[in-house]
Image (cartoon, rainbow, N blue to C red):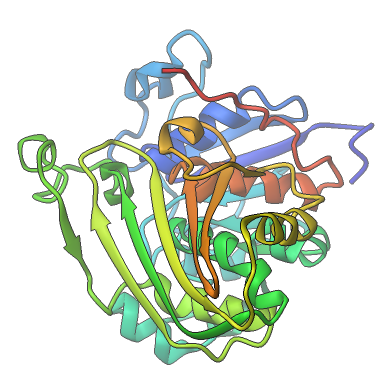
Length: 348
């Protein structure tokens, strides 16, 4: 497709949730995209701006009921984003016409091992043949594969924060022994529908761990670390619920094979991410307030001899979902990956 001839026509399946809302917020202002279709069963026929009030006055789009089949629905569409709950995209993606590019934000196509998927997502996988054609869409570690892909499995939010914090160490063969990831997330990671663990009186002054040793992003993280380098280490991964709406903060504890000081570690990461605009290296600890509503991942470090901690902060809905999906779309269509994603955070 020659961008000089026409704009990218995009469809969003599942536009009423937080991921779909963020896709709309970004794509409506993308200089090379027209959003031509947005589905939402519960809100079918409602104006997008009546559901996502932050978009009031910015779009005339209305939601349509999600079709049961793809036949005739995607005529003249160039790219489809799936922002559906886990398990739904796998029934639709195999029937997408081959000229259309697909970016799935759910977990349906991230894992290459069917048994691992079914163990962690607690449902059968019905499209493993299609999964074989998917490229894992962590742009910073898989840029060239993304550039030539038709099917993208967008990474999970915890996986994004963790992989970006560990990739330079794994790629350089510097890890010795156990890796411990202590990760915390805001309530928006649980989705737009109210639940016991996202109810405001429960969440506002609370702090607790969840899914010990069973989080679905663990096999995804280990799968992709093995793609980055020689990953043979034990991973202990623990997630916690923060009393904030959005943001992920991960403290990643590692043992190094040789002593590095702060300057050495900073240089190592700077070299690895020298072409990665959306990874920023900060002094000391990053802060989720600095990355909220942006596509940035901020990384900081603390070092003592062979012991190091990497701190990673992202917005779970942007770099951890919709922003990274658009970053991947840009590459797939031959655009600069920053296009439409220069989103400054707020202060305070």
